[in-house]
Length: 122
Image 1 (spheres, rainbow, N blue to C red):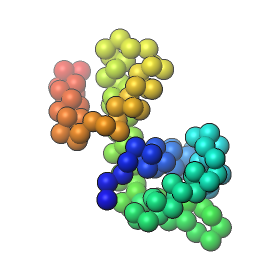
Image 2: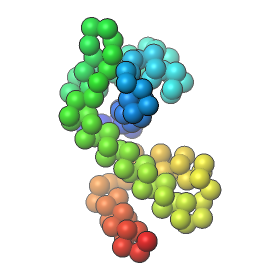
Image 3: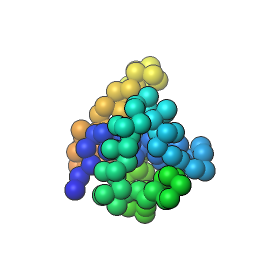
Image 4: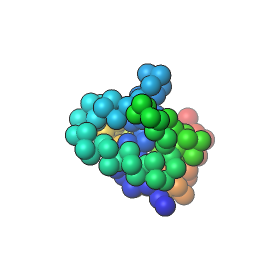
């Protein structure tokens, strides 16, 4: 089952929060994303069902191996695309915002082609 944009955003947020905090809960995700707890609860449930996260009895969320792989892939897309847009002369804020939108719709084939091209000509 492929992740949709919303699922990718939740996964990316969990990954980022986990890097800065040792524990992540749904309320942390809701605050970070400025979403309702009900929306986050639904999103967390879908990620859990897909085997990307686990939630313990205390409500703490951890990424599974599969979840870490997917989150790192999303983060790589975001970082590479942001870097490319900045190198093209786009201001950092706009580049990050646009990269966030692009990362969810670009195919793997196109992304890796662009990444390879820019790495070759750095």
